[in-house]
Length: 236
Length: 236
Image (cartoon, rainbow over all chains, first blue to last red; front, top):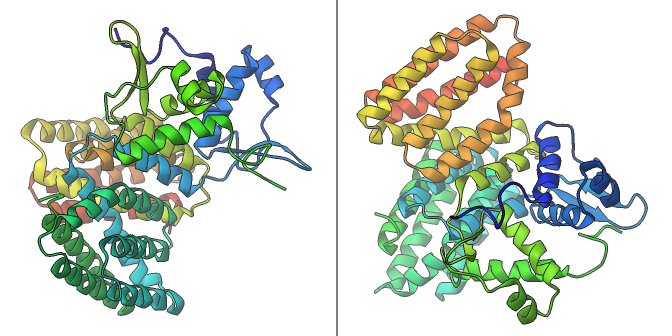
């Protein structure tokens, strides 16, 4: 028999966890609200202080609460942190049984949206950073360095789009395939040809964003991801 | 001064957590692998057993490990569970400072993709379930009941698409706005007119999926979400 843990029913830390989570989901706990002390929570829920502490560790790791020292110290509900979500998303993707084709479709859906929004919203400073990044790629030969700039480009477009949630998910997805892309790149018979094609594709995407053409930017990103994944053997 | 917790540096549970997470991200820990015992991990990392237990609580809540009793008992790396990811995603969205417009764009990106894939992949059984759900909506007047069927429709299309990751994210996003949609629906001057329009939009989406027209299905879903959110005052 396999259960979620060694005995049936909820662990006491889960009782605490569900109590706080229910407060967040119902809107009762809002960002900045102070939680009761460990002692008070333990008494209120009739659980041990170590159970409360275990639940707090979970919430803290998930980026949902923060503790602080100094005046007004205590445990508070935190504004959702994209990096905590992106990291958890990345861990899940690492253990995902989802097919590569599935991850590819999700990545394309999000990055099409980011590229189209970037074409509508990029200011002159953002456009300049995009140009600089394409030029930097042009100056780099080594796979690892190139791969870092490539990741940076996709994340930058997502950030420029102003759609923070899409950007956080894009970071998680892009980081999750980073090792795959790196290893497949190293196994390519002709890295230089692939690299030159990637630069050309990125240049076209940046041109569409600069030219304020959302539809072209979205289509070029989709074409780029599908073409690169096919070449690398990551998805058909 | 505000820090992540009451003293500088990592908590000991975080040392354990990062150790296991690094193993997952590097591919060293794969699904089904057994982790060392609490005692062995504590000795290996020179931390207390309670620190190890706290880290395990975090990993378990994130759906990354499971513990089991019986033969072969112990703590193992789990296949990524969509419900754990969807729940965490939903908690984050509840505390998100992201603008409504941001959430709307992410939802549209994901649901356009789901609808297009559903139009390519739905089998006859799936098409029948979609038809039945539209008919069920037609039989329901009460806002809460209608709202549940509406959520079910969007989740069903995502599941039919076969893109599990997109579906899990869709569930999180849809659940996160459920209360907003419910409250706004109740505040509408003419709920019946809005309801009839929703049914008509869903019927058109189902027709496009049945007609194997991915582009139409994607466009109809986007039009539907934007129109509904405008009517409900959730996004412009």
